[in-house]
Amino acid sequence: MGSGAGGGARRGSAGAGHGKISAALRSDNERECRRTSSWKAAPCMGTTRRNKAATVLRP
Image (tube, rainbow, N blue to C red; front, side):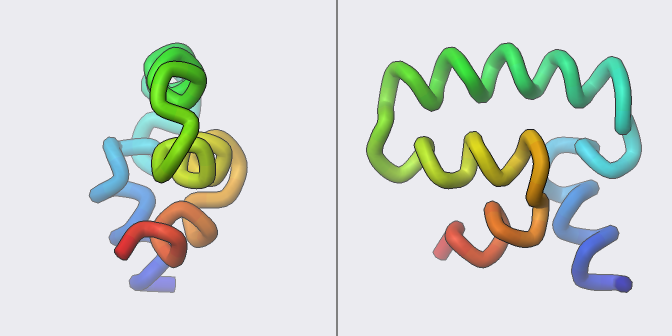
C-alpha cells in the first residue's frame, strides 16, 4: 500500500491526479518515450498504466 501510493505520488502525482495530471503526463511521456526509446520506453509505458512496473524498472 505505502509503496504503491508513495511511488505513484513521487512519479509525478500520477496517483494524486488520476485524471488531468494523468493526461498531461501521458502526452509528455508518449512524446519523450518516442523520442528516447531506450530507458524511457519501459517507464513511459509503466506510468500510464502500471506505476509499480515503472518504479521497479527504474533503478
